[in-house]
Image 1 (tube, rainbow, N blue to C red):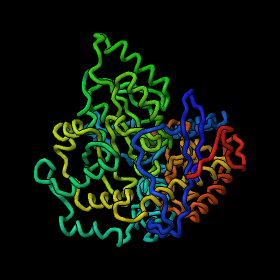
Image 2: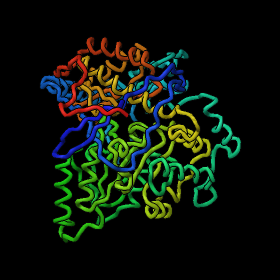
Image 3: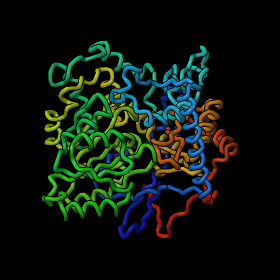
Image 4: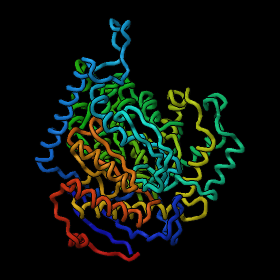
Length: 554
């Protein structure tokens, strides 16, 4: 049964397909899934555009913002007081400083710039960089550590915190695993080629496995050609300067990843930032760019490049790709789509946001993604038409100077991608995609019922829970670890000062029992720390569809 809902959204007739998710069978700790054979949906190559799923960005009550600013104000005042104590010698300064004979030099360590680090971050940094000592699957083991000087240094106790549920890794499809049956081809490739290549691909580092991977990526995405790189961050930061330069205009979403921002800055192009997922803001900038041209000279821009992400890693929101593609065509701009978090994680067959919205991949000029998340490996790719890829092979610094991707990593990506595509002859890949979608919907719906404020799209496996106040961020992380749940907490300056959060990443490797345990402890901690700020009333009844809904048997 496929339920089809016909709705009118912004004057356009759109089609929403809600497929029934298969219930998977028993799941092992390493992520291997056993279950029923699911229906294999073909990749979308175009056709009708799918409706944009609802997103939640609920605002907290005013008192929460006031208390958050007050909390930062108090810790800032204490920070200045502690700096005074250090200056008069009553407190030891642990940070790096210029030596006495270098006092007249240009300062290497900017004192004020490190204020936040030494006075705020240091007191709470036990919540980050926790060392693990096991496979980083759905559960892992942590090395216990303590500090005797308020987190300036740590020492290991020799004890291990075992079976901590991993809610922070980007292991969307559970391919961070050590199943020897699945990893046999990776072991064989290591024995055949070794671990390192020790050369760039333009010299003597181009292996047949690299070319096989690029053909597979192009086939998976439904584009003409693709090329791969050994580092996901560098895929953005080193390739964007090869695509645009001085005299070009980049229109960048305000919440784009640091790698996109760095690449844009290195390019020398003019950068303008539009409001997050705001099509009115984007169109206004496009219209102004086309009408006014470059500043002072008013010459036409050489290129206009729109840069967006598929899923935004801090918000869990999904790019409004259908509208962005429409604007791109209307104003004759280029589109750069970063699918680091969306490839493999969304879409009926894991082909990202283009498949999620049933768009033609050819509508995206530059498709970028990484292998570090859904594929359990390392590196990234750029995909598009052959002219684009051939140009980057000779003009990208990452392609010309970087060492080629090591063979075991290449084989890991190949075997994961073949598993997703079903080329290896089984349905494990499609089952994992469906399991991830089911886990995402279940986890998000339960959090809303509990009264937490969460951000993002209903289809996004990235689930931010808003904590707001700096003291509660620290208390939340420590309380969850005490309950053997590993979480990632994020605050200023990585987020706006009033929007500190815990970011949960769902995985196909998470069992329902794991999620229920996490939700149970979240409910307790949320009550203890008063974190349930939502004022929305969630109905216990299932969502009712529009009166124009109808059902089709298929």
